[in-house]
Length: 238
Image (cartoon, rainbow, N blue to C red; front, top):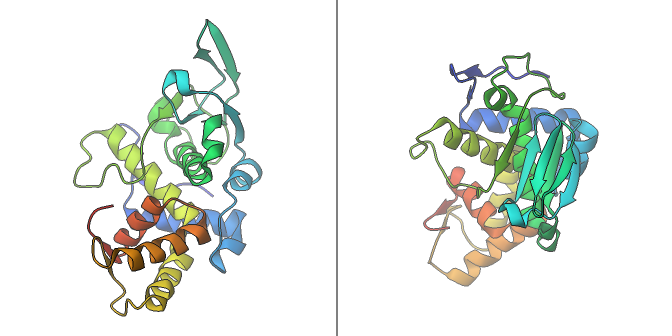
C-alpha cells in the first residue's frame, strides 16, 4: 500500500478527516481485518510491530518532558546525566510510566505510528516513494492530546501534522466501520433516540454511554467524546 494524498511544497500530506478514516480502514483491512468485523480494542502493538514494521520500546522519557517519539533514522537520544539512548530507525519510544494508564499508552503508540505512516517525508524533507518501511533522517517528538487542534484552528504545518496524527490514530483505535454503529446502539440502549449526547445534560446517563464505548475500544473517555463529536453524536465540552 502507498499513500496517495496530495502534498504541500513542504511535503506535508493534504488529507481530510474522512480521508484519514479511509486510510485507517485500509490499514486495518490489510493488517488486522478482524477489528472491522465487530467492535473490539485494536491491538496497536501488534499492528505496529507485525504489520507496519515499526519496533516499540519503553523508556523513562519524563526528564525530557516527552510522552513518546518515533525515530526516522538511527539516533542517539540524549538522557539526563550525559547518558544517551541508541534508538534504531523505525522505533517508537514511549514513556514507560504510561503503562500505568493503558488508554493513554495505546493512543500515544497509535499517534506515533500515524506519524510514521504519514509524515516521514515532511519531517525529513526527503521526497521518497511512500511505503511503510524504514526511511528518513530525523525523529519527531510529541506532547499532544487528541483533538488539540481542528482544521479551523491549525495555523502551521506542524499543527496540521499533529491533527492528522491524532485523527489517524483515532481511526485505528476506533475504526469508523464499527464505531458509528456501536455508538448508535449504545446511545439507543441508554435512551438517546436522537442519537446525540449533549454535555452537561443528564450527566450520569451520558457518562455511562461514554464509559461503555471507552471500555469496548480501550481508549480514554475524552477520546470517545471527540470521536463521537466528529460523527455528530456529541455536543459540548470534552
